[in-house]
Image (tube, rainbow over all chains, first blue to last red; front, side, top):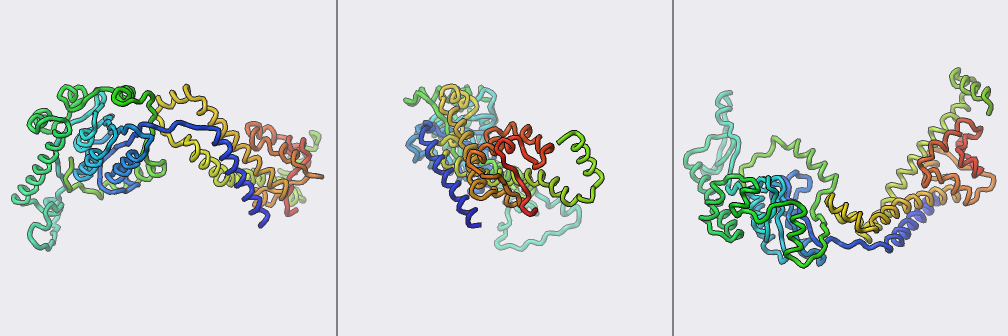
Length: 284
Length: 175
C-alpha cells in the first residue's frame, strides 16, 4: 500500500508540474467588461440555492468588479420582473457608489424593481421588444378567512396589541389596517419615484406622467418616453462601451454566475418551495 | 486458435463444462479488465486530471472568461491561443493518464484499478517501452481500443493487439 501511495504522489506531482509548465506558455487577456446577471425575482440575503437573485450576491459581485483593476465597465444584464423593494434599493445604492461606467442591458424583462436598478446605471440599453416600466409598488397575499368559515374552521389568534397580526393570511383585513398598508405602499412609491426621477434626470411629475400609472411598455415605447437610452442587443452594448470609454476591444467576464450545481439545486428547490413562500412584504 | 478450437470453446461455455471453474475465471477476466480500466479512469479524472485543469486554469484563466456565443466565436477566430490551449489540455491530460498507467504497471505490475480487480500485468522482462506500447490504446489511441481488444477472444492469454506487440499479458492474481 505504501508503494501505491508513493507512486500516486509521484504522478500527482508530475501532473502539477506539467500543468505549470504548459500553462506558462499561454496568456489570455483578462476580461475588461464585467457582466453581472440580474435574473429572476430580486430578494434579500445570500441564499445560493434560491432561484431568485439576492441583493447580497449582487453587491458582492459589484464589489468584485469595483476592486478588479482590469474591469473598466460593468454591465448589468437584467432579465427580471422585480422583487423586494428593500433588495432593489440595496442594489441601487451599491451601483450609485461605483466609480466605474455602468450600463444596464435589459433582455426580456426589466420592470419594476429591476427597472429601478437599471435607472441607477449610466446608460440603459434594451431590446425593441423588451418589457420595461411598471414603476410602482405592490403588496399581495392569499387570505383564507372565508375558506375557513366555509369549512367551519376557527382560527384562534391571540396577539397584543390588536394590529400585531396585520396582513395575516388567516384573518380578514380591517378597514383601518387596509388604509395603513395602503399608506405604506404610497410612501414606498413616492420614495421609488423620487429616486428613479433623480436617476433619470427628470422631475417626479414628469416621471409619473411618463410611467403612466405603473404601466409596462415595450422597449420602443420606453425609448420614446425617455425611460431607456438606447435600443439594441449585445452588439449595441459593445459599441456603446467603445463610444463612452476608451476601450478598443471588449472582453466580457461574467461575475456572480451560478455554477451548474447551484443552478440545478436552485431550480429543484424552487419547485419544492412553490407553495411555502407568500409575498407579504412590499414589492417593486 | 483454429476455427474448431473457437467452436469448442463456445460449446463448452454453453454446456457449462466440468472445468467451468477455471473457465469462469478466464471468462470473467475480460469483465474484470473492463472494470479495472473504468476504475483507473475515475481515479485519473478525480485526482490527476482535476489538479491539472485547476492549475492550468488558475494560471491561464482559460475557463474564467465566460463568453457569450458571439464573443466566443470572435475569440476563436482572433485568438489562436485558445485553439492551442484546448489542444494542450487534451494532450496534456492524455500524457498524464499514460504516465499514471506506465508508472504503476512498471513499478508495481498493476494500476490501482487492476489492484482493485486482483489483476496483474505480466511480461518476461518488463521494460518501459513495452508498458508504453500496451497502454497507447488506453490513452492517445483510445478510439482504437475496441479494435485493439478484439484479439482477446482469439488469443490463449487473452491479449489485446498492443499487448501482443509489447509481449505482455494480464492475469488474475488469485490464480
